[in-house]
Length: 367
Picture (cartoon, rainbow, N blue to C red):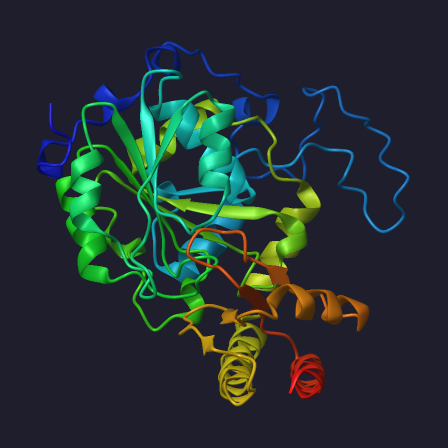
């Protein structure tokens, strides 16, 4: 069976592992009680400490958190204009990637397809689950999908395709028409990771999950919302796919304090947009400044909050030099198609200015 024909033939149940279909989900105490008004209730159902916790600033952490994060999902749905029933929240996007493999890929039978250079957890998670991971490299320099090669590797055991756009570590948008073509033609699951979408001018696919029943969008509160320490990943998909994720997730996968802080952050949209504007301004400043430094061969176009910078001959040395000067960047020189490249996150103006001055100082030593 050729699974690169048309997603109009998409059959979700045929993709789900048999053992997952037969799983009887664990039902937590808080899921059994689903009434909205909780303040006046006496909770004696979950073996919690009814006397409270030692934390003086709160009396709520002795109780288990909402297992389905309904208040937080409501805030996210309002911001993204997406139904709460099409949203799943995970302990980072990594938990969601793990769940996708568990639901859709049979160990030692099925395989996923990834497009290096890209986010490494797609492959790591697949290997952990005993699922083969086929690599189809992005095109050299442009870092775009090679549709012909993708079509050649797809067969009846191809269950999941992972696309990252904007892509990490290259920073560029993947061409929208190519993403659409894969979603339309692939009869398996297409996971589109939009972790950096708020930094891009490209429109999110999140509004199109009704149009594409095989599409799962990954987003996060870690990047543009600045909540990496909370570990909140977002999946946006059809209600049916979200129900399968809820069926097999761990009962209380996001803590009470993480939910509370995230809700407060999402209510402060003005500050979010202020920070986003500054990141985009600083990205432009960094790009223009780095291009003027003689040892830098190329600053790749970025639609994210980082830049991939090619520094032939000097990348390893300058990486160590920056560490000696209290600057930590990411050495990506060992990654396929990223030879002699560093990945540099956009910082504050003071941080970026210091970084640029240090690279200029190193450059003067070389010439």
